[in-house]
Amino acid sequence: MSFPLMHMAHTGALRDHAVTLEYRHWQNPDQLRVLLARKEVDITAAPSSLAALLANRGESVRLVNISVWGILWLVSRDPAVRSFGDLQGQELLVPFQRDLPATLIDRLLTSQTVPGVEPVRQRRTRDAQDAIALMLAGQGKHAVLVEPAVSLLLWRDAQQGSGELRRVESLEQAWRVRFPEQPELPQAGVMLNSTVAGDAKLAAAVERAYAESAVWCKAQVSACAEIVRVYLPQLPQPAIEDAIRSTRLDSRSASAVRPQLEALYRLLGDEDLQAIGGRLPDVGFYGP
Image (tube, rainbow, N blue to C red; front, top):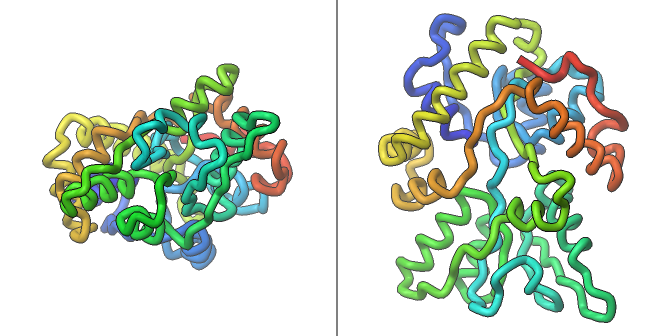
C-alpha cells in the first residue's frame, strides 16, 4: 500500500500543503511506533489495528482512508493444496508476530479445524525474508506472505529454475467463504500523526491525492513499478508489477468504511480487547 505514497512523494502531490514531501520506509510496526512517538513522520501507511490502538491510548491520530483489502496470500509447492482448508496436519510458515495478519490467520485456521484431524502447525519466522529463504531452500512447503513479498518469492523461484511455487489463495478469498457476514477486511490505510491530524484541509488533501495515485498505479503498472524502484531498488521490476496486479488497492475514506472497520475491531476485541486499546475509537478518529 506504500506504492501510491511513493508516487505522491515523487510527483509532489502535496506541494500546496508542505514544503517537502519525503518518503521514508519503515520495516515493522514496532519501528513505526517509535517514529510516530518521536514525531519523525506526519503521514504514514499503517495497519488499521495499530491506528485504533494509538488513538485509544490517547494519541491524537486520525485514520484518513483504507486502501488495502487484500494483500495476504497462501503460497505452496504442493499441487494438492488448493486452499487454506487443505493445510490440515501440515506446517505453515508465518512471518507475523502479534499484529493484524497474525490475528486474521489464527482466526481463519481455527475456524477450519476439523475434529479428530491434526490442525495446521504454524511455524513463526523472524520476518518475510526468513520465510522466503526457507521456501527457496526447500525447507518449507507452505507460507503466508504479504505483497510484494509473495511476488518476490515467486520471481526468485522462477529465476532458480524451479517453478514449483504458486500462488494458491488469498486470505481474503478464504475469509469471505468462512465469514460471509463480514466479507471485507479493511487491513491498512493512511494515518495522520498527531503533528498534523488536526489539519482538516490537509487530511482531505491526503485522502484525495492518495486515491488519485492509487488509481494511477493500477492503470499504469509499469510506470508505477519504475517509481517504486527509485525507493526500493532491490525489488525486481517484474515482481513489483505482479504485486500491483495482484493487490486489491481500493482507496476509500475511513469515515465511509467505518462500519467495516468497527466490525474488524470488534472481531479483534473478541480475541484480545487490548489489541485495539480496549474499545472502539471515537467518531473523530475516522477521517478525513
